[in-house]
Length: 457
Image (tube, helix red, strand yellow):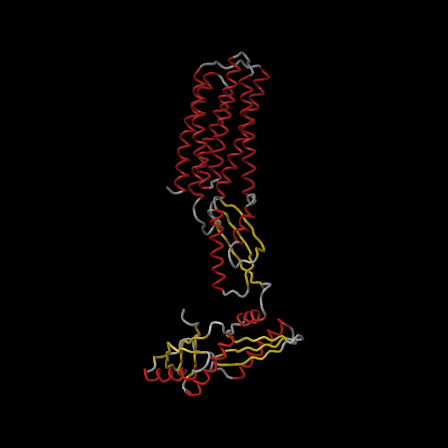
């Protein structure tokens, strides 16, 4: 059963129960002349009106947001609860006035019989069942309207007990018992209205539930990649928690990774609140452990430039930066030089005017060069040459050699093995020497890509 169906079903059942009990108490109260019982009947009548309003409201409060209601229709529940509160205060005032009038004039006590006690006991049982059912539904659906209705019926139980006590006092000869019980019912109604008004007004003025901000902040901070939460605002609309946050993320992260952080943050607040709508604004910031190379990569990325082989040397007094910048192979030199100069100025703005920057311009490799596998004889010739250049050195077992002919020239891929204790720089130097020898022997080779592996276990 859906949450919406559960809410409307409980509210509908409550309407029939409220109507039946209100009519029974009112009829018996008139028959025996009991102001306390009539007051309780009027209280139940207000509950009936409240239940009808609740039934109508919950049918529309769960409707999704539309062009006119961007946050949905959940606030209708708060407005209905506020309207019911006003009715309760009007009723409490009327009962108090009538009670005072009867006490002052010394009105005779009501006629006592077993009938009003039977009606009140049944009323207590029915109200306890309704309060429990409504409270459970309100907790499951986080409905403020159902929670207010549950509170009504719980207070009705206390009111019925007060009427029973008043009737017992009247039966014992205390003429003022019934009027005093009616006044007690009015006070209970007023206290109930005060409690309802406080909760409803807090929701209408968008006061965040206690502890909700800390809970939401903790959920978002628990997402990998979130450095800090700069600001978080939260409001309740019906059963939905709307969260608006500004969170700091590393500026070196690509856009797709930031989007992944947003998705995980939404999942985290959904888990914490059950039903949450998160607006996540990511602010890129520099981390404390961000290196000079990281900062240069950010500058290039923000400028839409492709760079690689970034080298940085610290001479104490100044930094020396070397960068390979890839541009369109057909671009004219003066245009490419302007791009390089702009990149150099951006780096100097970041690190200071005394930083020394050298940008090496090279053609951008095509993303999808057309290619076909080379003939077997060509592959065997290149594989044999690679094995010969590696012979006697620390690189050995040349294998998985592949050669492709592309529009840009031949591309060679191969795997090799090296001693596990060798450093990366040593492996690179040895493999680089093999690659240079191969390109000298085979001028048609455009690029050589090697993959060094440790020995087989």
